[in-house]
Length: 82
Image (tube, rainbow, N blue to C red; front, side, top):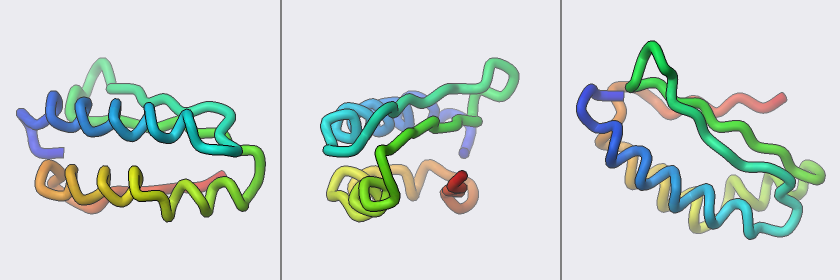
């Protein structure tokens, strides 16, 4: 993330988290800001099954988030699944 954009990112992340928590199949959705690197964030998400993960990834809330943070990042948004 580009330094100085943390507040805007947090606002967008809160909007996404609120929407994601209301999605069917969502078990947990939260994000964390690094205490040593304030421009670094991770999201922790749990879903009932792969269908719920796919639904979230294609949701309007997720699409809006990725669009909102595009200019705030200094690289690509990285999404890893486990």
